[in-house]
Amino acid sequence: MAKPTEAPAPAASAPSVAPPVIGPLHSPHRRVTDLLQRLAPGKMRVGFFIGAGCPLAVADESGKKPLIPEIAGLTKIVKDDLAANPELKSAAETIWSRIVARGVALPTVEDVLSHIRTLISLSGTGGIDGFSTDDLKKVDAAICLKIKSVVGKSLATNDTPYHILASWIQAIARDKPVEIFTTNYDLLLEQALEAQRVAYFDGFVGSDNAFLDLESMAVDDLPARWARLWKLHGSINWWMTSKNKIRRSRDVIEGEQLLIYPSHLKYDQSRQMPYFAMLDRLRVFLRSDQCVLLTCGYSFADEHINAYIGQGLSGNPNASCIAMIWNDRADAPKAIELAKRHANLTVLAADGSVIGTINRSWDSTIKSNNPAFPIAICNSALAGRSKADADQCKWLLGDFDAFGQFLAHQLSTRDIEQDIPDAP
Image (tube, rainbow, N blue to C red; front, side, top):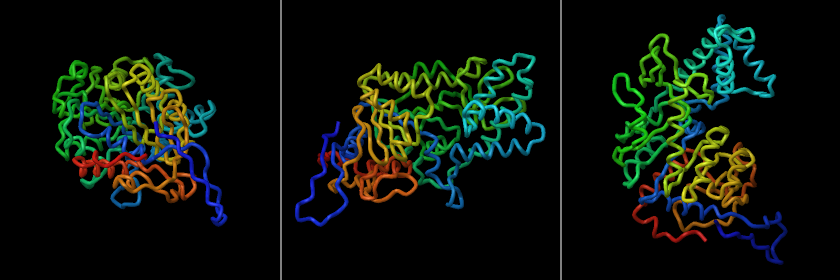
């Protein structure tokens, strides 16, 4: 844990200025050097958790909008599409209004999918609450296909943070494979790994219609140079066939259901199976003797995943999780709550951090003895992102673009970085 520091009191002769921040603070510079050391070549297992905020770091062809919208934007697109469908409009409006009536003021598309699947699990063959099972399944399928059309974008350049992450995985030799966990349904990680020629295993085997191979996932005896990619919320190229088999393919076959977003209900075990298998890989990873999981773009809004992370950290004192938050601590209350219960979960937010269960602001002392500092830390205003004072140090690596730059720096200096003294 970083040594508590205290801002020095101004000299008696100094002109009157805003009062300094007094009290114990965390050092962001120490976090930078700690992060570099954890990412250095070695025997420690390294995992990355890529959340829904990461695609926002990649611009579309116009350069003015994210390549893939945030969940609120995706929800609006899906809702508008259903409203324009005469066959599904009435059912969709009713479903939305019922979720709002349950206290969810602004339902997301994932809230809607969960509600629909809850109704399907209870409907049997006779329908429920005025909905036929067929109508519910049609709305579910329409939502998933619209999601596929919105997030099924391609990376236009080869210098995105995704490509840098892939290059980092390829360049640094390790005794254990790098594992990537993601809640995103898009194919951006796959595109970047393949563009950088990084071998990876995602649980599927085959070419034309790849099938989920649970035995290979469990045994996991592929070479360490193969990355592992685990998609916890499914993917826009996962399909449930008419024979209840799971395949991975870009091809669309009439009557097959996209496997996007688990409801965590057991109404259909065959549909739940791939999600549980992927989550089990997170459990196994956190049980590894020495491991670190770095999250970026994840706000800890998914209680089911949080439970897995919390259980893993509780059961293995040698496991650690470093959560990099895009905005302030107040904007990630579930992450803060979890970090206060688990000393091996560190939360690094724009305005401060939770380290060793202690929640503190950042020390604003400026240090310049490490070229990685200006990539990860700034002491200027972050409008729309942080409410901290302009001259207070801010943590930048919750932005996937900044984290990519940090990984690129670590690659370019990996032979000399460890000779740079730690930040006091």
